[in-house]
Amino acid sequence: MRSSMVLLTLLAGISIATYGSKQLVGYSGKASDAASQIGKKLKDTEIALRKMAQKLRDLKRGLPYEDQGPVQAAADRLEQMRTELLSRMFGKKGKP
Image (cartoon, rainbow, N blue to C red; front, side, top):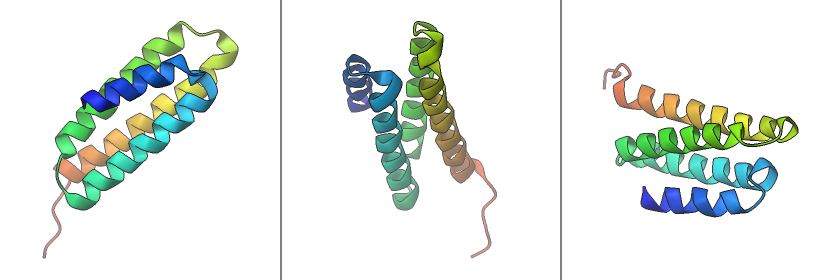
């Protein structure tokens, strides 16, 4: 989780409105997929996704209107990944 925050801080220094948000979503997707496939660290991954999405929304408020779109899209994608993880964690269990 700490590495996620370091990544977010690093990406904020790079043009987050374009390149950074794409990279953040890409790495978050890989982390989410890995947690889902392995079945471990789902809770930690969900918490990290929630915090990163919130930081992106906070960051968006300080950007010019023209640059807010990609950041909002990245935050929305992180929320979608988070919802998928929550469904995996608390969804109905199938019969074996």
